[in-house]
Length: 220
Image (tube, rainbow, N blue to C red; front, side):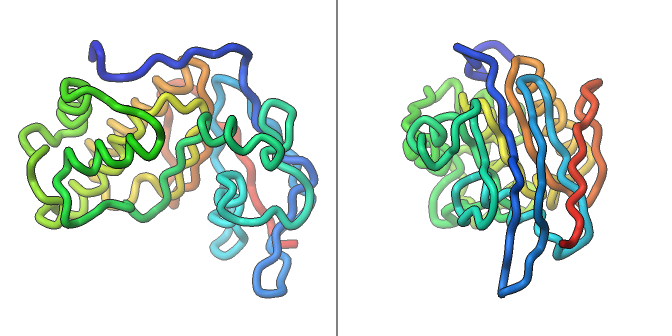
């Protein structure tokens, strides 16, 4: 859809690296010695048994949790040494929608975009909502939406983000079959343009014709 998705302009091909990564929680080590490298145009599916630390790994990648062991590198540089640059390149969506229930759909999009230093036009916001099946709902309060519609509002923020790295924790929660396909197409377009995506999901999904890079976490 013309004018809907910001173009990703890459100065150098980005890369995300886990080096001897380990995580503890409540005094128990969840995983250790995780090594992995993700390059531009690839997406990573993080798998593993419940409780093995998939969400903890994603939170570490986003800087929301302390890295207990090892390092996370963005473009071969530790993320903790380049926080501003890394935040600009990162878009995180957790399994919770993180929407303001008392605000309208459009107000939520404008608010979250502003937090990221962005100011999408009214036309861009309208196009994104239409793409996610939310045409005509921009002025509706979020509290009046169904769970599936709320999830679509949350996911539509991805289409407004120029970030090169998408981190998605259970992005298909409360999505119907059509919504799953729309999101898969959005991720595929992002990766095809040279972006990267890391996701966890209880359901295996296909991202266009792009094969998944798989990281299976195992208990330490």
